[in-house]
Length: 148
Image 1: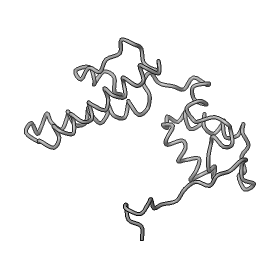
Image 2: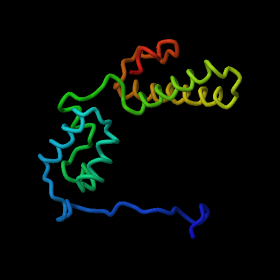
Image 3: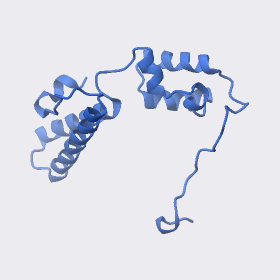
């Protein structure tokens, strides 16, 4: 048995130069599947899982040469905010709703502080990468308007 001290446990993805022979889909078919799943309002992470588990596509980038988000962006399926930032904002909103009923929950208060810190840090990163506008700022009071 592995311990943390002696190394990582778990499986690693095999290194490949080309698509395995057992994959039934070509580049265009995989891109069509990605777009079909995007129309069904699945997130990019869900799309990757569905293609892996239900369609037997081990790695989308290996077959198409593009990441899921690149395919979605090329076909106009991107949202205003990146997926990871949106997930953090949803989490912050849920914790705020919890705190409305349980004002003195110290673990929830601390969790909200950490989540909002992550949102600000990620926002700074996305402003630097020019994914968010330079004047973007996290405003907790406007969270309900942003999160759908």
